[in-house]
Length: 204
Image (cartoon, rainbow, N blue to C red; front, side):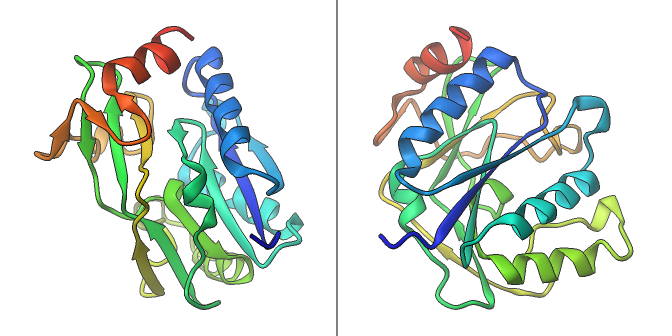
């Protein structure tokens, strides 16, 4: 794969630091030779608006035509970072995404919706769209690019992305983190929910 993709790793440091280190280590294994640029904030300064402001600034520092976002509560298979949007005007989201809930007996829940953690985007288009959105910032309307009238498309990978869902995550209090009715105890690539929870979250 040509080196046309940069990874923007974002952390709000809302989860335990040992867990975040394990997530970051797994990301290194998944991205291959793609450069990783990091942005960090503290929980007290964390907001959707500030989050996107930081991402825009980091995106401006990237030298590649495409960017992918990696969040600090998400596990990625290497297959995910081989995907690209079909054109330079379109935002592409991976729909092969399972949630793993940290407060219950371990199980996976299929959540097929567009979230920033699964976005691969044309870099310049991302900057253009989000800068325009931030001209009149409104936390309630600060949706992912592609959900505000822009072009978007979905793709699927054989191996899934896994998002650890924890009570401090954005959107938790609004009820966006409810489990779907499609659930599994084990999924391809990652294996059992109990094993992943023990290896990545509980042992941290």
